[in-house]
Length: 424
Image 1 (tube, helix red, strand yellow):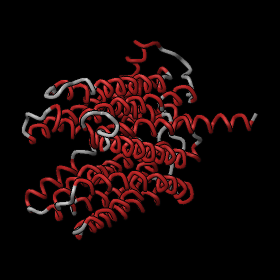
Image 2 (cartoon, rainbow, N blue to C red; image 1 turned 30 degrees about the vertical axis):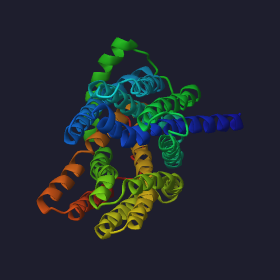
Image 3 (cartoon, rainbow, N blue to C red; image 1 turned 180 degrees about the horizontal axis):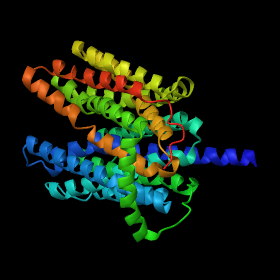
Image 4 (cartoon, one colour; image 1 turned 90 degrees about the vertical axis):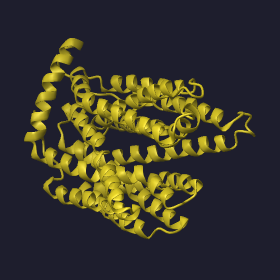
């Protein structure tokens, strides 16, 4: 019986981790590459470049705000009904369908494209709330670090592999009979949706979550969700380890997100060719795969605080090293360094948080976790942008991120390795 139980646990762990393999295609291929390029050159080709940048930023901010507002409530409702898996599947289906539909708007139809992109991004962000929360259903507490790292590792590998295939198909569109690069890119959007949907199936079939003792019904769950949400907010404030962790996480993950978002802009500002920026992104993805697994072992052996602080030290070194970038190989070296720690910091953060919160209320607590993650994509880019404007130097602007990494690392000292049985 024990062997059978262990086999079932392994199946559920791999099924859970494969969702990251699937949905990372959206993050890597659509968010970071295809949609911005098509918006500027296909759907919004008649608009000024600054206008499309503004529109993309506006939609992205609106989606982030929507997920930030909805995530805790949806988490509380799903906990009450025992339907984290159902909500994950529903939002993943919404996101994948909208991604496939992005192939339909013709040239110049930027309004429809932005609307579909917003729906797809909303599905992606909301589904991740329930995906993160299912970590407590598929892994035992002593395995949180390794299982969380496995998810991130497969995400980087799957997202990078799909991105490489999609990029190759777009570059070879003539030989593949796809007509134009725009046509190939639109087919790549359909392929992204299929990839995402296909790797959602295992988690829906293999993962089992505990059922609540009482099933209040939908109306009761919504009413109870609001009450639980208010209670969770009060409890986050009361549970000092959770509050300190979220404050530290907000600081350092803002720095991590800023590096991810601003790296290509920084390289372009230094005059690096687009092919170097693309190859650096691919390099980061593939380096992150084994590195995330290694960080899982570091966290399991020495604790998540040590692993996260190691990662933040590397980020600080990369920030300082960016000042001296003068050639393409310098940029590649920094990309490798980021790849070595990017997935590890994210994976150990999720695992540590899972240790701090009550497992029975994981979805609603992870709703707050995702709220912090969403808002941790605002202050860092703003600080970098304002500093660049005031100093006239992209190199000097990046140095402001040292405060985010250092401040987050210091605040982690206030957080215990685990909260030790937090309960409602």
